[in-house]
Structures are given as structure tokens and as C-alpha cells.
Length: 243
Length: 161
Ligand SMILES: [Zn+2]
Image 1 (cartoon, each protein chain N blue to C red):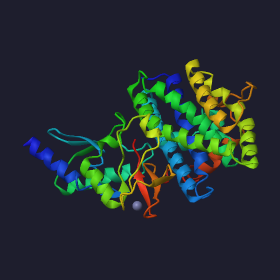
Image 2 (image 1 turned 60 degrees about the horizontal axis):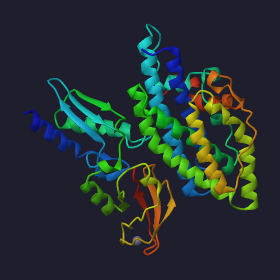
Image 3 (image 1 turned 90 degrees about the vertical axis):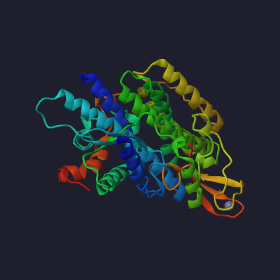
Image 4 (image 1 turned 90 degrees about the horizontal axis):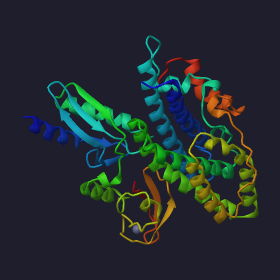
């Protein structure tokens, strides 16, 4: 039996993976070159796979508690909840912007996931531990791939550097939210890794620590509604339709 | 009797292939984790290579079909995530088949630190070690794209995972 808070935590992990996965999938067919198009589509697939694992487990837990309501499924959790029910961090729902912003977001967020999953591997709940263990291997690749791009663009041409600096300015205020309810050790490890990559990229860590927040409580930016409108359209228009 | 059946089931599973790497059986791939038989059911436990592996549903269906055709009934398929699949579980026979198919097999053992360092990957066509990484993600998430600077052929490398 899981309480509401534990189920919400599972949904939070699932929503994070689904929304950043969906954002990355928007690049499918639009990547700058074929290899990178394939890479980012594969990363999107990893995220959506992780989301499925968390949703499936959340559904099992929800159904274990319920008595006579319609059983939850991974699909109902992904496709039939509304903006206020989603618990993802705001950074995952922001628009992709250009290649610099897209990669900086993946780098900042997957580095956070890397240290979070490392900790969740030891979770008292064995199923959460198993999903974290599985996801960690994938996230390790995401960190390296996106980190390489941050360095390449930050340490690249005048234009690529300017774009990476814009991305830092835009995304940084959304990073504070990641650490509101995680142990300080995770934030320290995260900052250490981000600092190392920024130094190699010739980028400066912003000193402004003011943080946007509210995603986990369902207070989202205006962007999430548009994502859900597109992602949920088929299930809403044709309930129970299947491929 | 039970162990004969079990051996037979493993043989049947040898005929099921990963749709994305058709040369390799799911047994050589290390996807099948357990085969159990009790008085009423045959229980097959499988694990995905990657969380988002789109082939898992198809593999499950193929396992069911192959076992039904071989005369088994009441087949139960279980999916587990832990311990997480690793390329260490690909059999030597599997690695040889990968190479023959033109995919460079994973080098070394899976370990967090190791798969983040650059490795020398041998070209599966001409065995040259003058190869370079083109992209960390190849035609599927489990492969990276390399090219050979000797024979000039591009090839997939099955990443250590
Ligand atoms: Zn060659």
C-alpha cells in the first residue's frame, strides 16, 4: 500500500521523463544532421521508456488502493490527466528553442537524473530501485552526449557561444526547482559536474539563484497545456483508440 | 521430465530473434533470464535491453507463438528490470554472430566508468583498428555509429552497457 504522497512521487518521476521525452521527440525528423536526429530520437525513446516503467508501477499502486473506480493504466495516466495533475519540473516543459537550448536542457536535467537515480537505486522500494538502476545506464549516455554538445557549442564559434550563453540565461532560473526536495548532496554533485563542463565550454555559472518553482504541485508554465493538447489529442478525440 | 522440457524450451527460445538484430537469438542476446515450469504453467522471464526498447512487445508475442507451436500451453511472460540487462550477457556465440553480421561486438566489460571512455573498436569488415566514432547513437539506442578509416565502411558498434 502506498500513500498519496508516495504515488505522487512516482507520478512526478514519470511525468518528468514523459515530458522531456516528448520535447526531445519533437526533433525527430528535424535534427541538424541525420546522425544527431537519430541520436536525439533515441534519447527521447529512452525517456519515454523510463516514463512507461514509472507509470506502470504507479498504476499498480493506484489500483492496489482503489476499490471500485476505473483501474488506472499507463495510458490513462499519460493521456487522460490534465495540466494541473502533471507533476513534472518546469524545466522539462520549456520549448526546445535552438540546438543549444535543447542540449543544455538535456545536459542540466540528465545530470540531475544521474545523481537522483544513483540514490534511488538504493530505495527501500525494490521496484523503484530496479527502474532507477535500469534508467541510470541510459542517463549516463545522455549526460555525455549533451555535455559534449555544450562544450562544442560553448567553445565554438562566436555565434554558437552566444546561443549557448542565451540558453544558460534562459534555463538557469529553472534549475533551482530540481533541488527543493532532494538531499543537498545531490545538488552539490550536480553543481560540481555542471561546473566542470561549463569550464571546459568557457561558460560562466550564473550567480543569480532566484528559482522558478511549482511544477511538482501542478503550477505549470503556459507551455505544458500546448504539449498535452498535441500529445493527448488522439486519446481525447477517439477514446480507447489503439494502434 | 521437467529438465528435458526445460532444455527443449530453451531450444525453442533459440529460434526467437530480436527483430532489430535478426541474426541473434534472444537467448544469445541475454534477454531471457529464466525458464520455469510448474504443474500448470510455463513461465518465461525476460528483461529489456533498454527501457524504451520498442521490440519487447514483439519479442513477447514471438515467444508465445513459438512455444504454442511447440505444443506448450498456459505460457506466462514476466518482465523484470533488475538486475539491469548488460552486454556482458551476450554469449560468445552471439558476439561472433554480431561480427559476421557486420556489427562490432561490445568491447570489455560493462562498468559505469568504462563505457564512458573512448575505446578502440575493430572494424567488423576488415578488422582495422583505425576507426572513429561518428555518433554515440546508431540505428537503435543500443548501438553507436562508427566508420572505418581503412575500408571506409560505416558500421554499427554494439555499445557496452
Ligand atoms: Zn574496415
